[in-house]
Length: 258
Image (cartoon, rainbow, N blue to C red):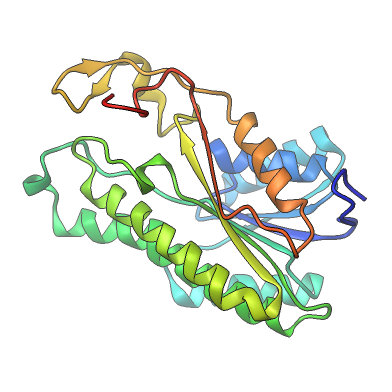
């Protein structure tokens, strides 16, 4: 029983992109809070190393499962494996994603566009679709989905058209999922993250492009703050939902004119 009065003992969570960065922090937070956590990604070796470390650190149960979430067959196999092993899924965290090269829009290749859309949007849709199927069929029915939207879901950075387009689309997927899941006790919310320290944000200390054309360093925050927020969202009973939440570095150039 957590602080919200919600019994999470034995609850099953899936975190995509759970081998490193924000996903690893979220998996750690959930495991520490009593969830059994499946971490998924393409690099099985990284997943196995992370799962072993987090299991030892938290005393929880963290299970690695390899899957390319942009591949419908791989996603289907992943959710079938979860259903077979655990009998249900209570939480999906759609975290996996990639950024695009910081080059002018006209220089983005069609291949890179497709790669970013596949990882960030199509992957989240495919996982959501399979989660719906499992959550509708299980007893008791229902579950929760938390999407990693990023602050790019509302405000772009320079040279980020593919990434920003997918994150704007995640907001639409979140709202549609919240609406379509309502009759089945499937709650869906979105966390928009601003500069959590990870491999993706490592370059920010040395300076990144700003809207006024300058290159300037930006502050980052410990991904543990993101994990804490996701644990809170996940710990609510299914009759309550955080539809949208922003967690960001206080002094980053986001609010106002930048």
